[in-house]
Length: 177
Ligand code: FES
Ligand code: FES
Image (cartoon, rainbow, N blue to C red; front, side, top):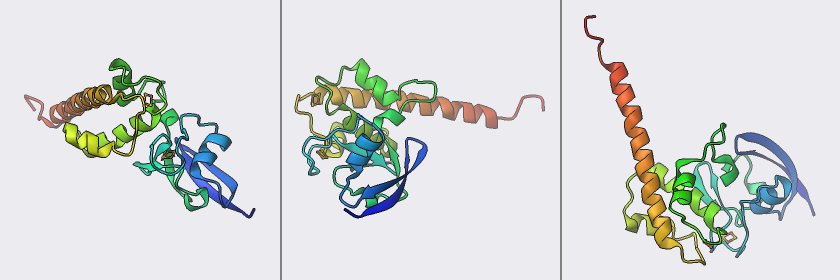
């Protein structure tokens, strides 16, 4: 099988691989980088278990050949937490709301929710259902997942409000000057 060189930035690190032309991004991430959160179920773009963020947008990694992923910036669940190991607010909300059962769908679900909240910090239940339509949960944890999305949205809104307050305080003239 012919091989081609591909460069990817994954979870903040640059990589270069020589990959066969039929290797999927899912295989590259799991087998070459050991990123076990990227899961395969259907292999045909239906279930969302293999979801990663590609340049910030959810992508079914089973559907993309790695040779076509040249230059992509990829984030997997392993890359979500902060450098101090703190969980991302969406991860924390999933934990606190117990928004999983077997957890097989959870990494892909969390990444899709991260992308959703980056676009819309106050999604309605209908917005959530529409955005997550490509992420299936065979355990039927949907109500808890919705609760986790609302919880995460509230955390992120509060964090934004805090940052705005600090920004306003900084831009206020100091009395007496
Ligand atoms: S394994 Fe990729 S969408 Fe199901
Ligand atoms: S928690 Fe089992 S598939 Fe979603």
